[in-house]
Length: 218
Image 1 (cartoon, rainbow, N blue to C red):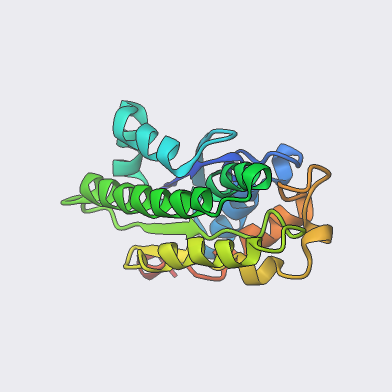
Image 2 (image 1 turned 60 degrees about the horizontal axis):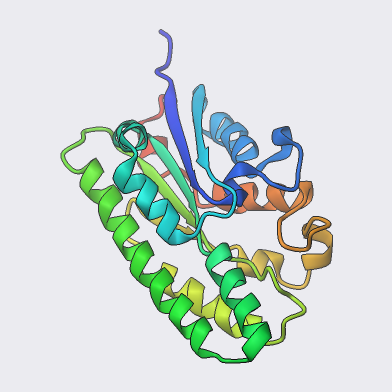
């Protein structure tokens, strides 16, 4: 008997796009391969990442794009990458005037938009019999030479941790990248290289697949 295909929706920013590495070595393609091996099922990837997207941009897409909304309803597996651009944009402003207010504002806005994003996805999935696993990737330090970045990255990630409740799980990327940024970032020093994307996929894979594994035929 042929096993039913699973649908994987990847939404978010340039980490979802795979900027900085060949497409076959992108986070979402590597993760799809790991998921197929773990679940022993064919997985159809729906890639909906946008370069430069902030958490607010991703929320807007989820609220306004009817195709994305339908994909969310029918997805078995969802990954979300958001927040890096919020931090980078605020840091660039901070470098100019050294006002921490811009970083505080970015943090508050990020937390607000991520809470709304999680709530919107929950609403779309309500009363759907399809069980799913949703993975939210935390933020690594995209500015390792910016001394204050460690504090702010950890604050951003703390917001995401508070949103963890099945089927949403946070992937701890910060610790995996810590001290290895030079080896894991591409030439632009913001985005991961092929090795960095491999690590993103593996860290996400380590969280398992929740109810998808429970219903997978042995």
